[in-house]
Length: 126
Length: 200
Image (cartoon, rainbow over all chains, first blue to last red; front, side):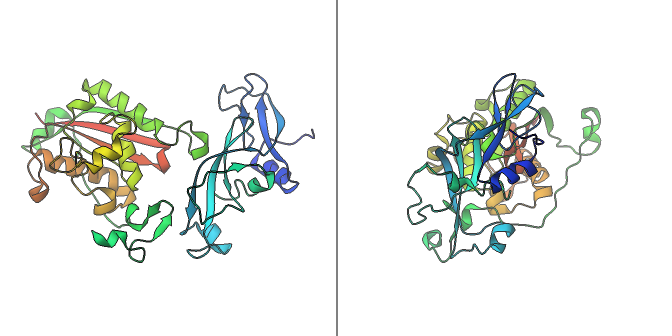
């Protein structure tokens, strides 16, 4: 794995190449997504890059009709809502992501995320 | 309250939250005079006393938290405040909690130990948290009905507790009120403060 700082900027550069990357603590094994230079679990400072499968389960979500400024600027609105969810990745950590391709007419349906492309907008906006 | 069922009057903001589930953006101000216990009676004949305080923090990102139906920071802050005051959730007679959204109030009443996890919604529906219920919550109307001027909200909660404890709450007045609590949340639960007040 190439040398890159454990930063959000690195995370996005990997994401541009369709790679979902986190950092793993060499001491306790906890995975941080997006990557962090310090372990959020044991405060260890020896981290290594780990590629995540992008597969996981949807933990919770909302269909947002009055969105953030960022998403309104991208064309989302009351008539064109977006789906935002929290996903438990198969490797353990949870991430937030814009869920593309979700069936918004059935907002109570739980679905498994089985495609990395579903997660490609992760962390683009707060 | 029929209008709440009308999608044009009460549209979805972020499913399942509708317009009237969300506290409005509000202007407002609140004021409290905080002095040492020994000199409190120089300022008022009816002081109330802070006997417990707690503050705790948690991950800001929702995905960084273990549980999405509870605020860990609220549980920890409450534990500190109850411990310092030497009281239990059952002892608290009324409370102002941070109901920035409908779900936030019921989760708060669970995090504070008033009701067991999962029982908060039922308790609210049954009126147990109404002014004439056994655990009055947000007699002020709370953030949703009173408004949520973010910087003033926390002190505003204390003002309501003071009015209740000193008999100044007019048509909102509830009986009792020797022991009350405020619960204030910042940044989606990444910080929570809990205070316990006593009338002597």
